[in-house]
Length: 464
Image: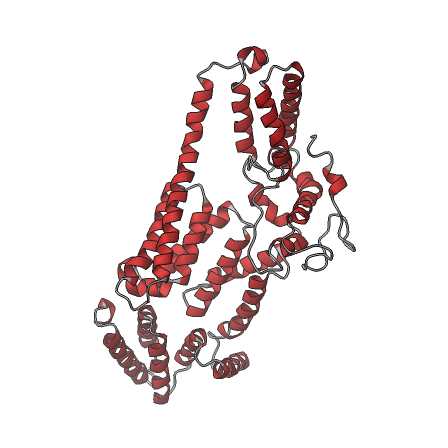
């Protein structure tokens, strides 16, 4: 309470900004420097005090849940300052004030507990029961409590305060606060379990950094590259296993799997192919967003993942809509988020093409989408996504022998065994439903596709 009292006097409202509202623009306010930590803290305090705390009352958001709930309340101006106008990605994991954090996470019960603690602390200091060195240490700790949140969250704060109470001489404690001496060692042992998991996870994090550096220093055509890229994923597998309560390991693994899915599918065929590797990444993302539904980086990753699935044909309608929802959520939380804005624009362009693929060839919308794709592909002939979409347009509108060679050209240029298998599977279905007039053309195309797949992937059982 004493630490919080002066804060409203220090807060400064940005010119032209309504109280409790977001600034009209996301640029850093005039008179502040990008990365100005004090200005960033004041913005965080303002949002916590006037927006988050009233919503969290009376019971709070739960111990350790500040980082989960706060992204909805972030000030776009604070984001601009802390991220250096979008140059880097930032997130707020604490309130930078332990008292604020305790109140937000535990609500009125936390306020009662904190008040009792301060009263007892004042009594101990006034009676000089506490050792002078202990009193000096606590007083020196207060500035950090008010500006850096060294206790991190309410759960850790309560453990710290309980340990402090238990460490007092029995005669200094209230009768109802006197515990047997074995309680303090027992509390320490209980806290060792999550602490040990964190240390084990961080140890694997160090191994991940070393493995990633080794993989980056190795050329993709080097025989050692497969083992080193696999080791990068292996260290994250170990980190997830050893520290399952930390979603960041899953988020990092999802990013690595998504960005290297094609290489990993070729270098490690035992992993089940690109589609299965991407499914692993999506599973990790789902688990992260279950725990932290407003995590900016996870939402951006979900949008990017869905867009890539969308581009490459792995995504069904549900996944595409989930990715779109993730992008929209991120833009609501952070209007003008650079990655989300770019993803949305790209998504809408691809959707303009993809959404008409199932329409009849003569439909005006189909013709419009086909023409749009043709213009886009002419301006960017090496775009694999556009090649993929052009392949499916040609497959769905197959009507003459001259269409066979362009289809084979797209398949070979895309160079994806799973795509060959998918095309063969769809051709088999089409052959079963074909009219007599179109059957010979479909059979010829099927033979040519299977022959090309055998030449490129002689060891793949699917093409034998």
